[in-house]
Every structure is written in C-alpha cells, then in structure tokens.
Image (tube, rainbow, N blue to C red; front, side, top):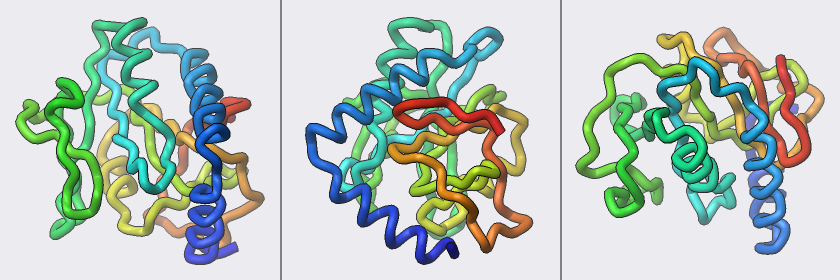
Length: 186
C-alpha cells in the first residue's frame, strides 16, 4: 500500500478503538516499554500524544521512566510548522504544556535541550515489516532523526503491515517498534 492510503485506513482504524480497548492497548505498550534495556541511556525524547487521534498515551511511558529511572532526562518536542523542524525541551510536567494551533501539546517555558539524545520514541500511524513508518506526512521526525545517532523506537497500537510501497531515501528506518504484544527489532 501507498502512504496516503495507509494514513487514511490506519487513522480510521485507530479512531474506532473503544475507550476500554485503548486503555488495554496502552497497558500493553507500557509493559513492552519496560522490557527495553535502559543501561547507558541518559536522555530520552518522547513525543506527546494527540489524544483526539487516539495516539499512544506516552504520559504512561514518561511516568514509568520518572519512577524507574529518575536520572534519565526526558525531553519532548515542539514543532515549527513554518520550517517543518522540531526543537527539544526538557519535560518539566503537564503544567508546562499547552495545545498548539494543531492540537499538539507542547512545552511553554521548559529549557531548550541541545545535547545528546540516546533514545527517541517516535509517533506513527503504521509501520511495516522492514522497519519503515508512516506518520502524518510532514516529515518532522525524518528530518530530526537524520542528524542524530540514537535508538529509534516506534510506538504502535497495532501490528506491522506487510510493506510500505513508496518508501524513499528520506525515510528513516526504526531500530525497534513496540506494539501492545511485542517489541520488534529491525
């Protein structure tokens, strides 16, 4: 399938998830996330969920990290839609977050992070068995990931599709993808 078709079908599928199923799927994600190897990890970039899109509840991951690895610095993105680039900011709590014009939670006063990043938890609508992902199509994460050497971990409420047919040279391959039932290494 092509990315445009995948976006439509996967978003429709995700939006049809019941509240009970959504909670169960997120519990599975946190259980799989907890199995990752965090030795040597000092900084983790985690996207913030667009709740209206039924994105994975990454606040569960943030809370788990804060409780289990309090020395790991958590950073979150802020998108600039004019340049299609992101900046990274230290996560200081939900009180510092505000929805942007695009309904995306973003930090307001948190310090800018310009240091190393060891792990990036990446949003996606779908991923294939080769480790490529389909996002919303703006390319924010592909541009961000091309300049860093970090573990790239997708987070998906559903299983892999067979193949994304229109992968191009700008698409960055995941190292892992976490689903509610497994963590796949590519």
